[in-house]
Image 1 (cartoon, helix red, strand yellow):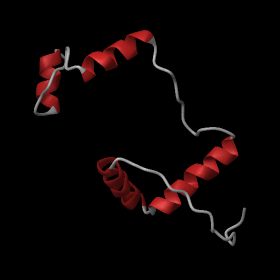
Image 2 (image 1 turned 90 degrees about the vertical axis):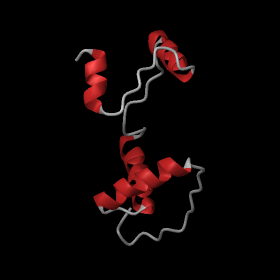
Image 3 (image 1 turned 120 degrees about the horizontal axis):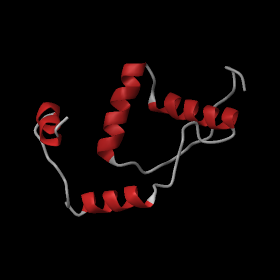
Image 4 (image 1 turned 180 degrees about the horizontal axis):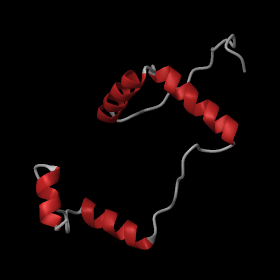
Length: 90
């Protein structure tokens, strides 16, 4: 692929609006458009022959913890990081 490659393929995806907005803010800070970021991701997948970051199936303990959190069990809520650390004793 070269810089003169014509880009004519379209990728469509449904994304949660709040995540899309937050991620686009990050892209803007990095000087990237969403299209450029997606193109960069695709190029990395192509070059690495796989996803360019580690993806794991959570172990049993993590799956149970996620499920408990979703149900509101053993969840600690804090107004800021300082009070969270104090609540956790760290």
